[in-house]
Image (cartoon, rainbow, N blue to C red):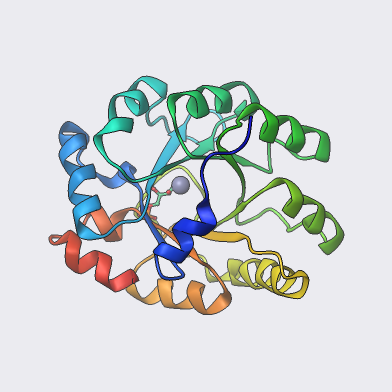
Length: 232
Ligand code: DX5
Ligand code: ZN
């Protein structure tokens, strides 16, 4: 089966930077309404934070909730799997219709697992996330990873909760991927997640990010249209 979602086309449509609000910061009692408001405000994608209480010290929501919201919007969705078994569960989210499924490098840590993961989630695109304390793989490995993953999600907080403070020490990770993709002329999505607001979004974009996840700074705002403008 071929991948049926063209994230590079979305990037173009979004004007060079994709805004993906995280519904972890939305009002769960009005989830449908919140997602429709995000779409109307100009969000490009919906970010789903999936937590299992093991990989991170929090539990969020799982496949039944995603299933209930997937058709409420025309926006694509990405599932950020902060869970210990992304190979098992990634497939389920892809089957529901999630367009990008992202696993953590702390749990799938070698080429064989990356390939199995990417294969299992077809037709969704594959992404890989890296926590702030985790060192970036060297250039040779990153180049290999670029053949497998379309999305590189740089965590700028320790995952588990929204509303945390941005960790600026992760900026060189963004620059590193941006440099390689420029050098090799391989277009890849460099996403940043955690503590993104008006100020920090500038920093990460300058470093080379082209997808920003925003939880609190989007759904915590009084006016989503104004909030979306900050990031655009
Ligand atoms: C953190 C999640 C993030 C979080 C972002 O574990 O992966 O996506 O919801 O929220 P903010 O933007 O408030 O840091
Ligand atoms: Zn996330």
